[in-house]
Length: 398
Image (tube, rainbow, N blue to C red; front, side, top):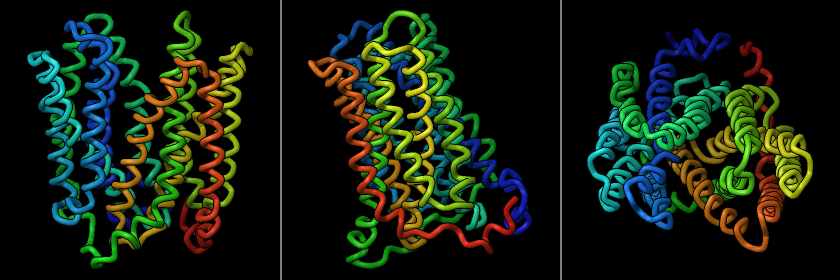
């Protein structure tokens, strides 16, 4: 179905959007279901607790490095080729975790899968918006967010539970699902996503407008990485931490999906400051609840920050695409994805370490709130430059 026929209809009617969504959903499922499971599996194989987390670190480290160089790949190879390669690199090695249980083998398998994860996320984050009408790009970004958020919300907890219950072979097998999903790849575009580079000065011209959105995203995802690390450690007994994280993940998933629908209609000038205030308040309430406040305070705080965590991802990706010329959108996608994964890893490490020190968990979350506030305020300037979508664009939307 052509894009023209969907100006006022559902974006799901576009065949390429459905196909890319399936591939991204499968790729993120493979990644997320093994993310928390791998350290537990490594520990079960006799590796020390002090090193099991490095298996995930290797995978995310390779992911960020490949993401930073992926813009050149998107200018040279077709969308379909990159997504197929990404799905194969993610899925094919997953069952090998059952055979190669030495630490070096776990590193090698994870490194290969990190390359695949990088390709799926960077290409998917641009391919779905490109397949939609220009005035509905925010809504399309939300669809990509849904492909990422649902697997992350369900897969991380599910993979960990299966592994701790002695069923890691099920996890490793489910990690193969991106290979099966390749049956949906036919409608994906056979052309590259990026145009030619713009000359010797292009990197500086392109990267500078992306630095502030990337810094805000890195800070928000760092706070999120800290939150999901701190709550289970500070609240190990009972279901309080699990319930709070479920609220955080569910609200974040819905926000990441639906906020884009609002950005197409009212722009970022209202949404960005609102999400910033809500996110800071959410972290403060979560810290208060963790320090001895009521459980209700903790739950409300986690849900509020989940709204900002999910919503800001969509808003900042849209802002990144608007900040550069269309032919440089691959670079915007690469920088956004690298900031997201780098922030998550940094937050889990730095805020998790702070929570284990004299700062305690509530102090670490308050530090995260302060960082989000300061960097988020710095990000207001470029947001105010961008106008809300023109009314002529919105007339055709539902």
